[in-house]
Length: 550
Image 1: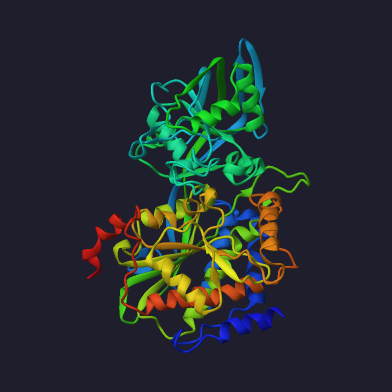
Image 2: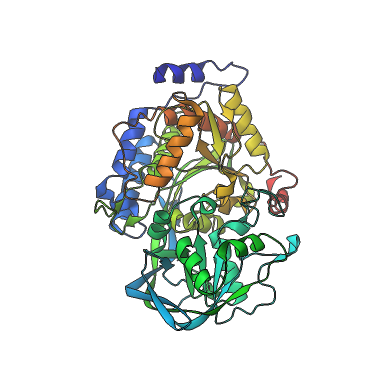
């Protein structure tokens, strides 16, 4: 039944809608690649580990077999298969000590239980904080263009700040931050950066599952192992000495012991009038050592050179990395396999490369970019976009794929965020011609636009989209799709349970990849330059390089 539906969708397209029918994609080949990449032998594909070595070798072998050419760093006048990405890697050594003291009564905190602190990324070899005052700083936002300042009247030097996750609008759905749709101000990355600018010795983000869009298990697993960042000239300008998260229940109790009402202060923080609140009699202490070193990891780069305009580039991207080996789950499993996230995207990238390699050469070049360290903060794509192998001014678009659905087909699709652009309009039109409806990001509050590898390209002006599998399943409809999504986020996302399953049909990916092929092929065989919507925050950056696209 699934194969019949796939054939109906693919081959009912009129000749006027597309110059040639896109190729079909083999669900078994997709399944085999995901199974291999997410097997225990690959040790969770952590950057700068034995798992990376196996992953890079495997993906390169698949790209070679698919018919791609190397598109990475230039070595002796020839392209390599990889782009070297130097990163700062930091680990907490030994058992970290954390505590709060309220009115002379100390409470020890356990890493991973009440608190999840990241290894210092500011260059510190050791972090010692002794009885630092604690300040509740609302949502940790300073946005002059919105006349919003959660830090007014407070000097955070020598203090530890507590802030809420997401935007002030999240709960009310209305206000100065776009309602439910998360802005960059709602991302934890921004909150750490702003805390550094404010001079805080530490920042703790208060975890709540709904506004974070994931549970505590994800926070613990993502923040208590090796931390990575691109090598920076002044890391302390964007990283406070201590960065971490705390559980909501612990925070509520801490506020209560300090004579404060957490819920009441949270409501105040949703208003422009909010002022920071010092937790009277409460202090925070920490003591831990940090092992920091510069390591090298790799972006993997395959390429097809364009036949007419080889200096113009269309990029397909997906990240190969996951979390590696970490804390055991309830079953004692320590390997974070990352089957859905993102062996699926890597398999899609390989198979799209195979399809293009067996088709007539496109007029523009196509790069198949398998980036590293996405799970560490989009670092592989950040590095590529800051030091591009092919100029961003003449990069037509980035088409990203992350955590695709390996199960059955859907009647629709979405994208991570729905910022207006010519690129998104074209994708929606192509999908409609192939019988797929577009649904605006059903969970804009999760801030997915800022959480995928297209974002570093977007903030530098390159039109970019990140494709998301649909939620209106052919078998079970939206109810089944939403239930499956919630089940994945709760039970498998960033957990050892994200493993390949024999029950996965991969019919959904096989159903959607012809759309992504046609989308990229049309861009690669045209002379059009898509742009962002006229009101987009990325439009000005793109327009500034317009002269280079003549």
